[in-house]
Amino acid sequence: MPSRKLRIVKHSLPAIGICERCNSQFKFTGTTETDAKYQIKSAFDAHKCVPLDSSQNALRIVRESTEGK
Image 1 (cartoon, helix red, strand yellow):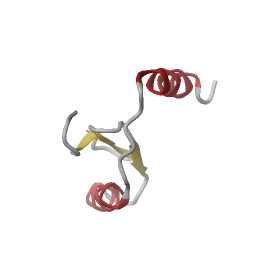
Image 2 (tube, helix red, strand yellow):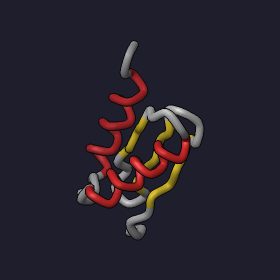
Image 3 (tube, rainbow, N blue to C red):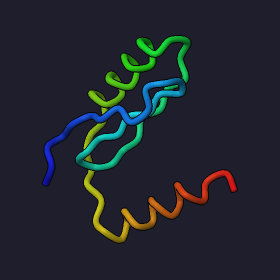
Image 4 (cartoon, one colour):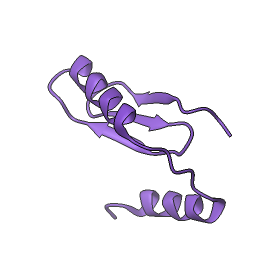
């Protein structure tokens, strides 16, 4: 299992970060990129990883791809 690690996938606003262990997403639409990265890091530090099994992960992918349509 991968170690708990934050990966920033979008640096411009709105910034998006992902936990590489449980695939949790952290979004922030602050006023500056530095502020957004700080808020994402804070949210990442506060969250508790709950790894998804493969069926839950597939459902999450479908839900995210159809969101807003």
